[in-house]
Amino acid sequence: EEQLVESGGGLIQPGGSLRLSCAASGLTVSNNYMTWVRQAPGKGLEWVSVVYVGGNTYYADSVKGRFTISRDNSENTLYLQMNSLRAEDTAVYYCARVDYSRSSGAFDIWGQGTRVTVSS
Amino acid sequence: ETVMTQSPATLSASPGERVTLSCRASQGVNTNLAWYQQKPGQAPRLLIYYASTRATGVPARFSGSGSGTEFTLTISSLQSEDSAVYYCQQYNYWPLFTFGPGTKVDIK
Image (tube, rainbow over all chains, first blue to last red; front, side, top):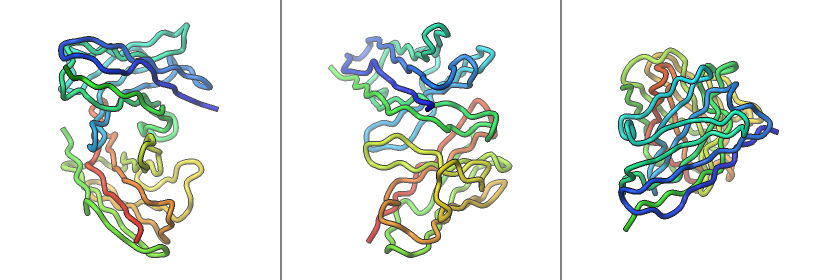
């Protein structure tokens, strides 16, 4: 069974840093397009970042220059390094697989999410 | 950026009713449109991709249609377990994926 499990969330002060992890099983992170999506409390879904199979990375304007997406092929894990955190980054962060082969881009597998709260 | 809008914001219907949710894109996205269902405290679940193809395990009462800028998600006979928020998403303009604001479906 293909599964994604996020971890690393928590309470962090404004200006701080946090690294989120997304451990994959049943699928190989390096062979897939992988993405992060976040959801602020009571709000909708916001795409955050994607890493292509070839390694190219892209970011939403709201996090560009502060967040970095990466992967560890040996650990089969996706990461999101978040620096210079702001109150508006408070959200549940989901990792997801971008299904290129079947749908050309829908997000077909999601983790359960990890909560990040930025507050003093 | 492609802006996605959804209507209505909330709808309430009785079990067995047919409901239709709308999604509009600010520019054409061909059929590169997905629908997701999200229940409280859960991750989103892919329902529909390519505007009208049901994902694995999705009940046949869910159907999607549309192309270009106008899309609909129809639930042919609403069930109690369909109470959720439904989001549309365009994936035509990689890597700038965008979601709509969602439609909340309540069961009367």
